[in-house]
Length: 197
Ligand SMILES: [Zn+2]
Image 1 (cartoon, rainbow, N blue to C red):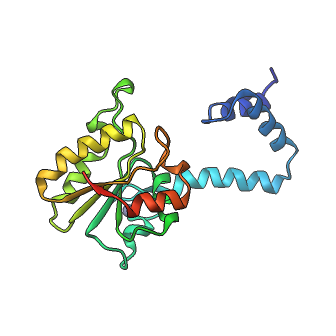
Image 2 (image 1 turned 180 degrees about the horizontal axis):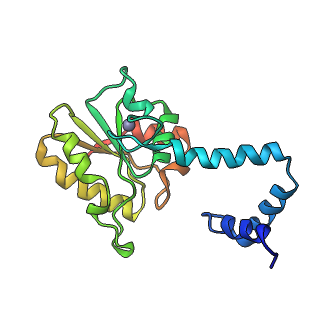
């Protein structure tokens, strides 16, 4: 539609999740008319996220060093691990202020239709952590949808024979949804009211 650089930018923006062709065009023209200092800050933030951010070697949350901020915090307990699908779920649970343990980020959920099985998630890494003998409770905080439930069921079957308490967030979360869409109070209550599975 346009030529050269502006079309390249529209094409790249259009490949981002949740950005349709119209939004891509609007953002591209916004960038074109924006203050050069603002555009440089955006470009530098994009480069930095790729250069500096990596995954925590313990829990696979996003981190800027070997371990994330939560794994480095000595005031948190090592005895409880909360399993989530994505780093954004860690943020959602942290906002509730209800949890003082550690996390394990799976990197998704079991989804046979998309060819995602247990081996594609960080389940083996989770089993290694649980094998250490320190953990007494595993909280399954996968999303309240089909894939999240399937993942929770799979993990419960694997972990229960190890003698570790396995709990799932209480109902009341919007079914079929994503953990991150639950408000803090609902998520906090679901956390407090978690049940053994
Ligand atoms: Zn971590």
